[in-house]
Image 1: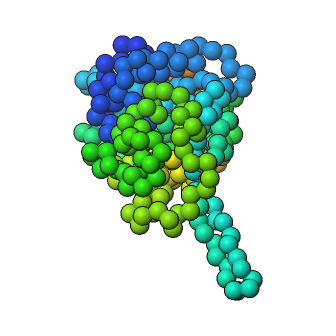
Image 2: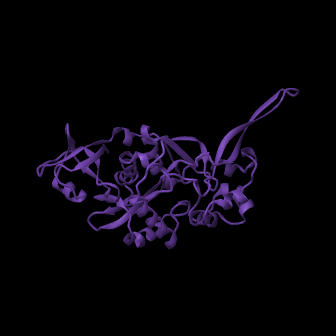
Length: 337
């Protein structure tokens, strides 16, 4: 069984291990001790802050395997991107080229460098050990963030987005990067991805081409990467798509992975979540599984549990009570798994 909770400084070695094994393309979770320590510090400060409206806050969570107490996964939420550091994407749009004299009218897809997601909340940096990548564990880790957002809506923007890792191989080769980015950055995809994760993003605007990139001018293998999900991220993407996220023709400027977005109120977990009291029954059993959350900000925690909704709350057994550190009558939050 697993528990998702906010990250703290003793979790740093485990987060370093996860970052080393995450693979290339998880830009916002670099294998850099100083950067990871900063992410924990920012999260702790964000959880302790009185927030009137979203700003530079960021919330980092870890998933703990209960039997071994080993940290096996992590994920995070940025309250708003693009405040101090520009946030760049490529927007895919058509450019019309027409000649009435020749009776030719062509719509050519092109990539426009933009900052359209600046000022928007973001889900990011979801990493889970391969040995624990079951659908239940992935769903818990991903959707725990949505329960946190549902409990604290004032800390986030009405719209939220997530970048899904694009195609690259285990050595860090990206056909899209080789066809476009390498010519302007003079470095391989692996190095560019790492620099993007540990430094500000100003260098993207300084080095990226300022004019639209006509898609048909790219090599065929690069064109085929546009909007394609890395095979290791397909399960994560499917969970978000089932929640209600959609692709709106934005891609990552490095690996061309798709950016998906949604209105928070339209997300399945957010719209269907309920709040009420915990009712503990030592003899209780059920076949129905729920995500159950308890605690506030720094004490927030989420687990999967067999439970049964009642008019005023949720019935569960003592094991879940102990895991969430609650008692009968505690305020909890839940959503069908």
